[in-house]
Amino acid sequence: MVYEFKFPDVGEGVVEGHIVKWLVKEGDTVQVDQILAEIETAKAIVEVPSPKAGRILKIYHQEGDTIKVGETLVMFGEQGEQVPQQLMPKVPTTTIETRQSTTGNLPATPYHPQPTTQRIALPATRKLAEKLGIDISKVNGTGQGGRISDEDVKAASVAAPPSSPEAMHPATQPGTPSRAGPKISFESFGRTIRVPMSNIRKVIAKRMVEAAFTIPHVTHVEEVDVTELDKIRKEKKDEAENKGFKLTFLPFVMKACIVALREHPYINASIDEEKEEIVLKKYYNIGFAVDTGQGLMVPVIKNVDNLSIMQIAKEITKLAEEARTREIQPQNLQGHSFCITNIGSVGGIMATPIINPPDSAILGMYRMNEVPRVVHGQIVPRKVMNLSLTFDHRTIDGAQAGRFMLSIKKLLEDPHQLLLDVF
Image (tube, rainbow, N blue to C red; front, side, top):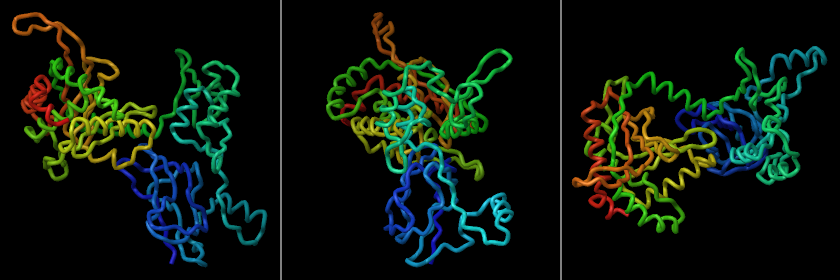
C-alpha cells in the first residue's frame, strides 16, 4: 500500500524549506530513520529521516525547490506498486490546454517538473562566495547534482578578473532582473540598493513585530563591578582554550542567572493569554543570541542548572559555531525559558533588547570598561559592566525585576561564593 510522506513541521516558526540535497532516488529501498534529504529552513539545515521502511516510488520535488510544511515530499510503496493517478503531481492548466491544442484527443503524458536552474550550495559556501566577491549563479558546481563546493568558489575566485564592488554582484546592475540578489534602484533623492530579505530575516522581522506590539516592555539597568570576576575568568581562560573552547563572561552570568531565577520564579515564566494564566517554569533552558551572516539566531542550552561553568562555556562555543554555519539542529533552537543577549561583545554600554516570546524577560550584557570608582574611601580603577533586564510588565512588576537584578549583581561582584565550586 502506498504511503504519502509530507514535509513535517521541523521547528517553531518554520513554514517552508529549500531542498539542498537528495540522498535517495526513485526506486531506492530505504530503512526507518534513513536520511532522505537535507532541507534548509529559515533557521538551519535539517536532515529529514524516513518515517518508515520501503521503496521510494516518487520524489515530488527537486534540489533547489521550495517545499512548504504539509506538502508531499516522497511517496513510498512496495515492489511493483505504482503511484495512484490522483496522487501524481498536478499538471498546470495552461500546460493541459497547450497539449490538447497540439495533440487533439491524445492522452496527456505524465507531467515531470523541469530541472531547476537555481544553484545548489550550502549557506557557508554562499557566504564564502559573497566574501570573495563571486556571483554564485555563475559558478559551475562539481558536486553531486551540480552542487557548488567551497573549492568551486575558490577556483572561480582565482579565475575572476579584478572588479569593482558593484561588478561583484551582476544582479545589482540596472536593468538586470534577479529575484536572488541586490539590485540598484532610484528614488527622488538618489540611488538605492534593494536587498531581498532572507528567510531568517523574515522570521526575525515577524517575531520582533509580534513581540513589540503584544508585550509591554520595561527595562531595568544595573551597574556591576566585575573586577574580581575578571580575575577568575583570566585564571581559567587558558585551561578552557586548551580544551578547545572560550571562557567569556557569559557562562558566569548564566550561572548567576540560574540562582536568581530560582529565587524569583516569575522571571522564568510565560503568560498564557487564552487561559489567563502565568506559567512558572521549573526548568532552566537559557537561550543566547548569536550574530550570524544570515541574521540573529538564538541557540538554547538545556538544563543549565545541571552544568558547570566549563560545561556551559563548551556548549556556548559549540552551539554558536553551529548557528553561524547553519548546521545547528532545530531542537537546539527551541525550548528556552529565559534569554541573554551579549551586546557588549561588539560594543555598547546600554540598549533595550526585545523579549523573545514566549519568555517574560531578556537579560542584556554590555561592554566592560575600566573606570574610577570609590572603594573604602579611595578612588581606584575598577572593571565595570552594565546589565539590563527587559521584562514583560503583564507578568513582572518593577520591584520583582529590581530584586532579580540585585541578586545577579551580588553574585557577580562576589563570585567566590557561587563560582569556585562549579567549574
